[in-house]
Length: 186
Image (cartoon, rainbow, N blue to C red; front, side, top):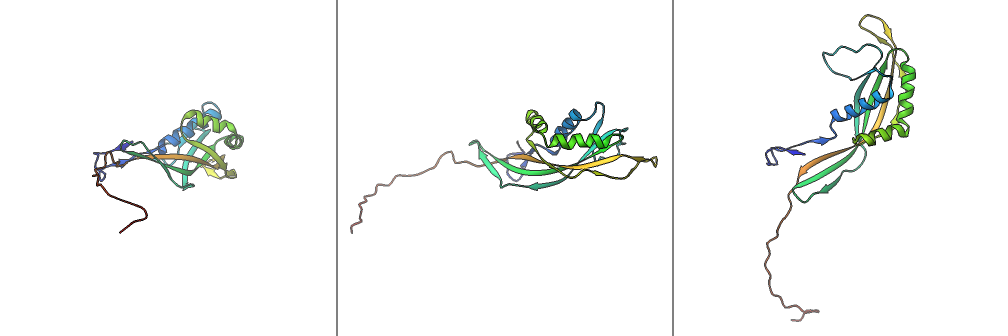
């Protein structure tokens, strides 16, 4: 959707899906496959205490364009730009049994279950690959060690941006009578 006053210099453009929508879709998928009651939160949020074990944290750590842009026109003042982007999200699982839960995440990310889930959600996400799972040392605020398993999930996200586009609704012209022959004679 194009927002603004109509003046191209004042207009700003909204990308869809937004980062928030990507996080929301990923959170819904993780909640659907992880044990009931497991908290799933977005990382890098200030002034938020960590949930109680077990819990999951997700953080978008990279974006890379993977195709040339495409576009369509609606003929009524809008051009829709489409961009294919590879988004990488790190998922961290904390608490007992996080190793087994991580195995479930990586197995289902590579399965039609994830593809079907995102297709049904309406968010244009297509699972691609996973990194190797890793166990990291994690010390809590109470100086206790906690299980932490992490993986990078890559996905293809189809981003769209609507832009204002000028179209010609009429073309002024005048007819001039011309005598022509071929081949030309002088």
